[in-house]
Image (tube, rainbow, N blue to C red):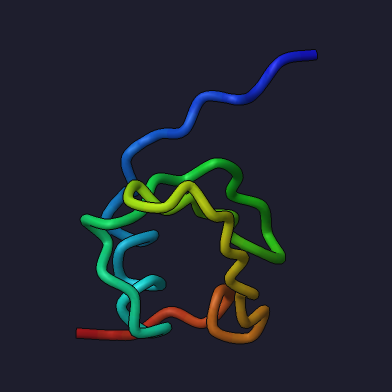
Length: 63
């Protein structure tokens, strides 16, 4: 099995990155699961994992 292809982050993934004080333009998404978001840095090639909050994922915010 080879390497998976990194993709540009979606809007919701960018929001999650911003909450974790990361700039979305510096990262690509490798894997997105219910529990975590795995990113790779465009500049250095290092992986970073962001844990998702299960309560926030199921809660909807009314506008």
